[in-house]
Image (cartoon, rainbow, N blue to C red; front, side, top):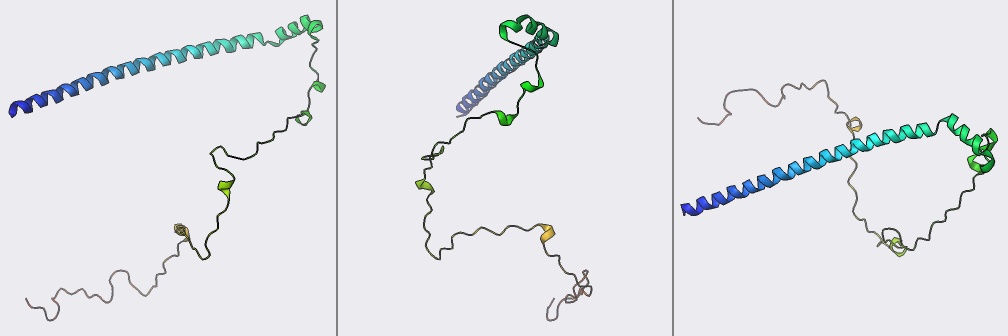
Length: 166
């Protein structure tokens, strides 16, 4: 019986060792993936910085003015004037007509929304009353005639009660 117990213990230890080995290598692989993603993010941020610099270089006002002057006759371009701008109220937006609600996005139909009749006198479940805040609670009234130290009905005597035998 002792041999079986030793073999089972050895198998359990080997199983835990195999499990720890796999967790260790899975963790190392996850750390490598995280490092690779962080490197990729850093590269993308550097590329975005370069693209922003190129965009700023291409959109220099003097360069754009030269391009407009060179291509004004071919494209019909001219300098911007204040009367080239309009008000948002001048834009004609298309009218959006919602589709009829035969069935909603959650599958609820108009028939499902019909109100059911409830039997007369059915009280139904009532919600519990809302708890009151401490500021809304009535303050306890303390009368000055009652002393909070000792109640007058209790006498602090150490003698046994009458009729008790020792």
